[in-house]
Image (tube, rainbow, N blue to C red; front, side, top):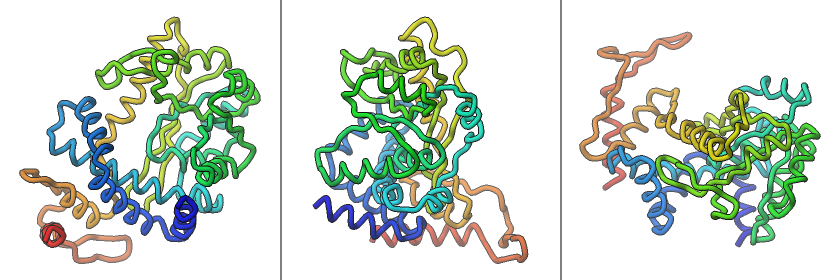
Length: 331
């Protein structure tokens, strides 16, 4: 079965991202319907993290999460098979010059990289520009394990460490000026974690980040990969290096890490869609019973002025067509 999955990902990776994206979304929404245990987990987590949101909005977020998870699965074939030139086009890095300055100055760096859905393709893109070190969890399926390892190591000179390897290997690699692609948001239980708030809930949180930074003399740079709508690609956001880290308290430092991840999640309750028709259809698609969709910016105009021409475009016509298309799907 795993070989069939790999073969399908190889076939799909030849498609343009604008076609891969809706295929992945459809698979994800199907999984939302049929995998009830995972659906309940997502609903519970959203209820804990965003109690202020209406239930309808949380359900819409849950469906969107599954749709993007489907995209992440389908588009993983790009990380495994696509040439570097294509990945460079699809995944841009914001703040790359800042990280390059740190590397050129021989400054060890920890890239604080939580488990966002674009993680794998973002890591592959980073590997094209930088020789990094990261921790690799072996997979039970030997075929999937081999291809995951291949996807994370096929560009440059990457160091992949097993989870059971000592912290000393991570420190050594960082001191060789390999940015550490560090995934902090894992629950290893009370032995390796401390309980600090995450969206107001006491959560077992790895407290290794301040110790790694201190032992490696490293600065911490937030690193978030965002999936853009449709075929627009991905963006890896590299933030400013943290000042005054680590501090005097491991608990305070771990709280700071969680607060950083919270902010990255909480500030992105929107989608950027540059095509106006696509944006109207997407808004109508997401709308639930009793929701109000507000379309701003054009008023009474029934045209759009492009670079070299003027075309007919009426928001009211597009909204009616989007509603009709949505109703047709239900029927």
